Length: 129
Image (cartoon, rainbow, N blue to C red; front, side, top):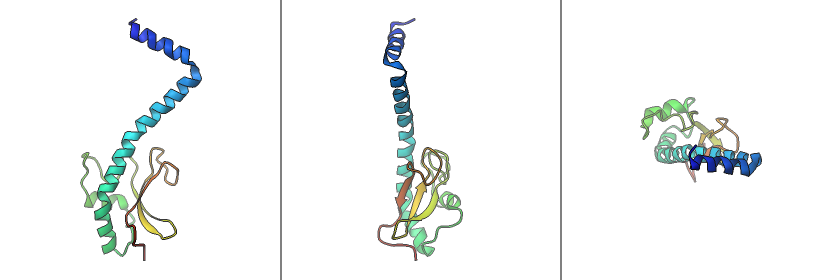
């Protein structure tokens, strides 16, 4: 066994199971950071054209947001635009007391309405009519 592997094994044993669990959770968090960043960048890049589309359609989201995104946008990664980098479809929604249209990614847990969602306002001053 190489010295590096032996030292790593000794360090992990010395750290104890509780610390190992913390290290595992941190590694899981780091694994989710890249798809979060990629999803945010993609959402930001679609915002202007989505605003134009919503204005021309009386500020109502279509039933199938995924189909709209795939017909209007090209993916920088070569994949489908209607899904985020976790593989879940984007959703169009309205949020807040002013009822602003928002684009939503369900985030790493793939469940919309939870704390890990990415929500981006499409407009900052115009609301649904």
